[in-house]
Image (cartoon, rainbow, N blue to C red; front, side, top):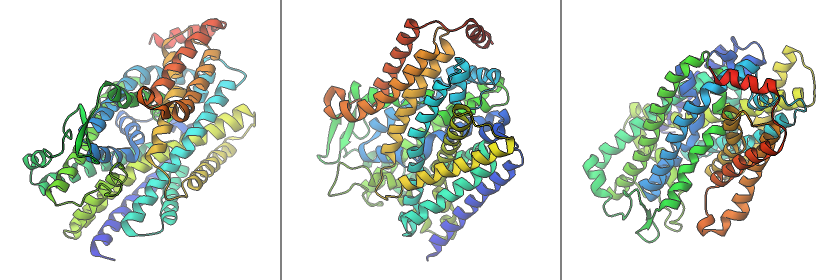
Amino acid sequence: MTSSQIGIIISILVYLCGMLLVGFVSSRDTNDVKDFYLGGRKLGPFVTAMSAEASDMSSYLLMGVPGVAYFSGIADAGWTAAGLIVGTYLNWLLTAGRLRNYTESLDAITIPDYFKKRFNDKSNIILCIGAIFILIFFVPYTASGFSACGKLFSSLFGVNYQLAMIASAVIIIGYTTTGGFLAASKTDFIQSIVMTIALFFVVGFGIVTAGGLGAVSANLQSLPGFLDINATYNNATNSADSYGFFSKVTTFCWGLGYFGMPHILLRFMAIRKSSELKLSRRIASVWVVFSLGIAVVLGVVGRAMTQSGVLESLIEADNPTSASKAETLIVVLANMISQYNFVFALIAGLVIAGILASTMSTADSQLIAASSAVSENIIQETFGVKLSERAAMLTARITLIAVAVFGVVIAWDPNSSVFGIVSFAWAGFGAVFGPAMIMSLYWKRANKYGTMAGMVAGGLMVFIWKYLVRPIGGFWNLYELAPAFLVAIIVIVVVSLITPAPEDDIVKKFEAVTSK
C-alpha cells in the first residue's frame, strides 16, 4: 500500500469515526419515537438549512453534475442546476412555513401522517398509500447510495465491491439507528461542509493544473458547443448538437421534485421555530447556488485538463455516447492530488470523504423516512398494533435495519445503475407527494378523495411515462416528472370538485394555519 493510499484511508477513517461519534452523542437526546423521527422539533436554522440540502444532493452533486458537464458541456448540467436552484428556493418559500405550522398543530411526525390528519382520514387509506409509495421509491433510492459507496472504494483501492458496500452501509446504519433523525441532521450539516470544501479545493487544483482560467477557456474552444447554453458537445461526431426549448424544459423540471421529497420536507417540520425558516431559506439558497455552480465548473475545468494533456480522457473510446466514466472525474482528480506528498494525500482523503458525505447524507435521511413509513404508518396506524414507547423505539430501529438490508440486496450487483435510479425515484416522489403537498397547503377545497386519487395517479404516471410513453422518442422524450406532476394536479382538482367538500372543522383548521 502506497503512502498516498495510507493518507486517504486515514482521512476517511477519521471522518467515519466522527460520524459515529455524532450518532452516539445524539442518542442522548433521542428518548421517544418523536425524537427518533423528527428530532423533537428542535433543529436550529443552520442545521435545518444545510441538512436539508445535503440530504437532497446525494452523490449527484460531486459525481453526476461534474460528469455531465465534462461529457457534453455546460448546457445540460447548467439547465438542470438552474431547475434545482429555482425548485429549492420555491420549496422553502412556499412549503416550509405552512407545513411547519400545520404539522405542529396536527401533531404529525411523518408526511403520510400529515396527510391523514390534514384531511381527517379515519380509514387510514391515504396514510397507507403514502407509506407504500415511500417504500417503493426509497428502498431502491437507498440502494443506489450503498452502490455508490461500494463503487467508490472498489475503484480507489481495488477491494471487493460487495464488501465495500456492506462496510459503508454498516457505518450509515450505525449512526442512524443510534441517534435517529437528530443524528442524521447533525451529520448532514457536517457533511454539507465537507462537500463544500471538497468541491472548492478540487476546482482550485484543477484550474491551477490546467494553467489558469484563460487556459481553461482556450483549451475548450476546439469543442463545438461545449461552452454554449443552447448546444451540447457530441463526443461521437466532434460537433455541436442543438439544445432547444424542449430539452431545457426537460432538465429544468427537476426542480418540481423538491415539493414532494419526504426527507427534505421533514426538515421543515423539525425546525424549532417557524420564524427561523426565513434565515434557513437564505442559507439553503446561497449554498445550493454555490455548490451546483462550482460542480458545473468542475466538469468544465476537468475537460480543459484533458484537452491540455494533464488528465487522461474520461470518454470511453469504444462507447463515446456513455457518460458513466466521466462521473469518476472527482475520484481521478483526488488520486492526482494524493500523488504530491503525504499532506496532499490527507487532503485527497477529505475529497473522497466529501463524495462519501454526499452519498451518506442522502442515505441516512432515506432510511429514517422509510423506517417511519413501515414502523409508524403501516405497523402501528394502519394495522392498529399498539406498542409501548420502548417497543416503538425498538421497532423503529429494527425496521430501519431491515430496510437497509433490503437496500443492500438490491445493490448487490456492481453493474447496477446509480443515477438512473436516483432520477426515477426523484420523479416518483415529486409526482406522488409534490402536487398533494401544494394543494393541501394552498387550496381549502382539496379533500381526501382528490388527494388519494392524485397520489396514485402521479405514481402510476411515472411508471407509464417512463416505460411506455418516453421510449417513443421525439416530442414524447420528456422527463417523466413533468407529465406525472401535471396529471396529479389535474386529478386532485377534478376529483375534489366532484366529491363532497371537506368538513367545516377541516376548513377552519386550514384557515387558522394559513392565516399565521
